[in-house]
Length: 240
Ligand code: CA
Image 1 (cartoon, rainbow, N blue to C red):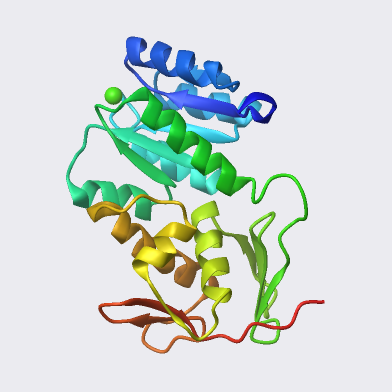
Image 2 (image 1 turned 30 degrees about the horizontal axis):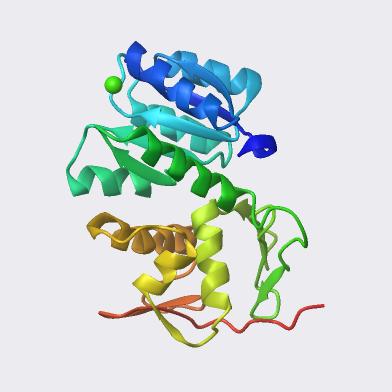
């Protein structure tokens, strides 16, 4: 990443793995802070913040899931979960709780740095150059700034989408009214296809719906197309 180095908080209770992650991430030009348990992690995040958190779920004392909840309450820092918990249900639960990606242990450090780079690319939008245009839907019912990922609803409610959620909505809005297959949406959120990553699209859609008050049974924003994918039903307002 060179000059694009990020500040990364590594939460990992195995000292050897923690040192290894630090080595690989620093070699990529990142600044690394680390913590061996959840309390130390939240204290470090409180004190210094982070551009990305790599979070082991199985920690002594405070569980990783609790740390993730606290991070989500604090804002929208991207979180990459690493865990030996292997069942699909557990992995999905982590993503549903607001993680941006999930890497099962044991993992190849190169795979980890590649995932980190992908998450940072998404969370930074398109990087240098033009900021992505503001997205306005249904005459301003939902307005999203993809650069900050902050959205505003008609009633004045505001919030932030995660990088994956924002990328998904922007991808749907690029083809209003068209059915996009999960696979196409996966490309948009830069995921690799596998059994879990197919489900990532569903999780992101569910999170967006919950945040902006979209009812899957009677959607104004995103319609589920059974066995196929999703479709934006809101109209896309013309740009300025
Ligand atoms: Ca552990």
